[in-house]
Image 1 (cartoon, one colour):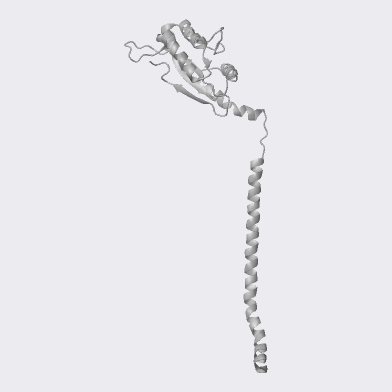
Image 2 (cartoon, rainbow, N blue to C red; image 1 turned 180 degrees about the vertical axis):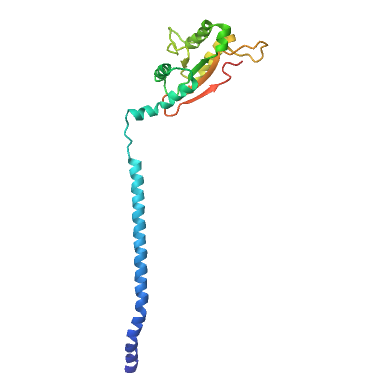
Length: 209
């Protein structure tokens, strides 16, 4: 037994010396992976903090920001009324500022050919009917513009259209008529007034029967 102990004791330093390189390499590898993990965790925290800061960031509101919100209404008016002066656009903007967001607005662009055939006085008479039809006590839906008409809903808008069609049939283009009767104008429907994106479209069949 003493011989076996002597042999093992003699071999023990050699075994330790042989194991040291492997332990050292394993230690270095463990430290490298540990450092990489810490870096990745810190980077993830930074990204999360940046996202939270952006989400909580408050945009200061000033006159420029407010004007940008309402620019789409002006742009819609300029698209629908390209010949209107800046003064007229401002007047129409003031009129539209009193309209509830989702109330429909009828905008009629005069057809000069119809006016040439029927006179401007008759044109004004038709526009006056659009402004007052179905209203009482001298109320108007156009604020004397004879161009922009505010309705509480689409049902009333097209009810008034039907009434005007019966009252002034020559204001409408009849595709079945032999004579080439001009429509009195072009109709645009504007909705979502005074919000970031105003919706508007031309109703090309409004004055067609």
